[in-house]
Image (tube, rainbow, N blue to C red; front, side, top):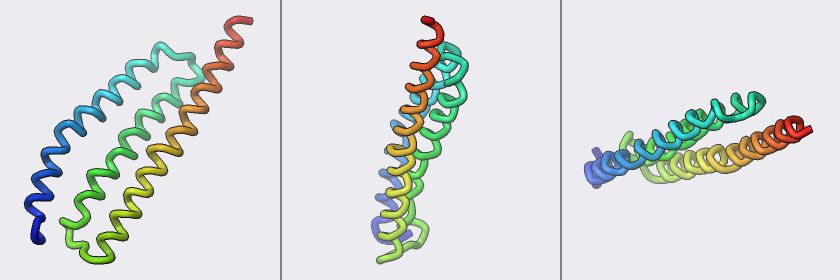
Length: 114
C-alpha cells in the first residue's frame, strides 16, 4: 500500500458505516413509497432507487483509486473523471427522473379529479 494508504483505507472503512446506512434508508424509503404511488410512476420510482445506489457507489469506489496503484496524473484524472460521472448521474440524471415522476403524478392526479 502506498504511503498514507493505510490511513486512507481506515477512513474509507469508517466513512462507509454512515454511508451504507444512508443509502439503505434512501432505498428503503423509496421502495416503501412505491405501493402508495400512481401506477404510471411506480417504475420510475423503482428506477430512481436503483439510480441512487448506482450513482452513490461511484464515490467510495473512486476514493479507493489511489490505493489500487494509480499515482500522479493518472490518479488525479481517474478520481476527477469518476467524481464527474458520479455527479452527473447523481444530480442531473436523477433530477430529470424526478421531473418525469412529477409530470406523471400530475397527469394521474388530473385524470383522477376529472
